[in-house]
Length: 320
Ligand SMILES: Cc1cc2nc3c(=O)[nH]c(=O)nc-3n(C[C@H](O)[C@H](O)[C@H](O)COP(=O)(O)OP(=O)(O)OC[C@H]3O[C@@H](n4cnc5c(N)ncnc54)[C@H](O)[C@@H]3O)c2cc1C
Image 1 (cartoon, protein in one colour):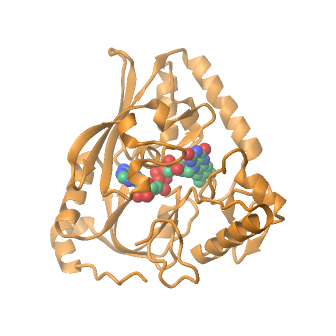
Image 2 (cartoon, rainbow, N blue to C red):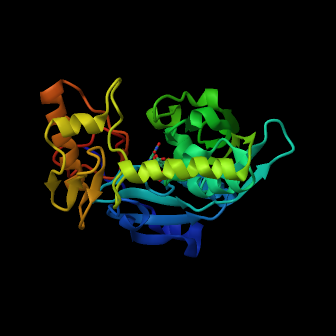
């Protein structure tokens, strides 16, 4: 059972003034358009603000989470008992006079926009990122990847503010990356990714853009449109979560306004005002169905965020 947290609203108002938004619906900040109310929300427009907000909240012992595009989180219908920092720090710079050439971006930059900028300048290395609808911060945190690339292979350095370790540049090897996870994600470490630098290699705009175009065509052919969180489960070794869910007869299953996509069974779509509870019940049905049929325990790729204490089965993911 999660104990209720009372936000020190007076202190928050005094510290953040008009920047503090109160009682905000988080459904407007997630790609699945799902999520209840958060007591306090701050929008950070650059890495200095991100640093300041995090430092102040740590000093006040107020729990907080960063949201990038909210494309890899299932936010509870009961919201989040703390402060959400929405990351809109989006500066980026391509550095061509160093070896290797690289692109630096603040952590709120969109991966797709970053990939397109890099392509325009005729550099290769970030084509894979063009199809991922998240921010640099969310990607560095969760080791996002697609097709022939991922963060683990591209990251040179991430500038990270850690509550206990202070501010440091972390190499890819220090992030302890594995399939869709990092040490920050697996250990729920109190850290804010401020910016990151990725390695590039010289190419031509035409070649890079053609590769991105092919990825985008492949994407549209295999994945469903609509409000979702992308892949719900990690693929178990040697298999695909979508194949197992389909073979267990669960493709197309609906609960409330949520549906297991008929196009790709590892995508859960918010078709009409789905609640987080609808999605959570579909998750349970898939886990149980795939376990009963194949003896495989599906692991969530997405994270749950917020207050799940009123749910029938508390999520096994990150809880607070
Ligand atoms: C249609 C669709 C397709 C997708 N395809 C892919 C794919 O091909 N490959 C893939 O890997 N993923 C995919 N995803 C999932 C998602 O886009 C990625 O995981 C993405 O990297 C998440 O970024 P975000 O900014 O949305 O993170 P959020 O969902 O906002 O956050 C995810 C986690 O990261 C933490 N976080 C975010 N920013 C920071 C920061 N600056 N500092 C510290 N912690 C932070 C959050 O607190 C949260 O715990 C897809 C999602 C959708 C909806």
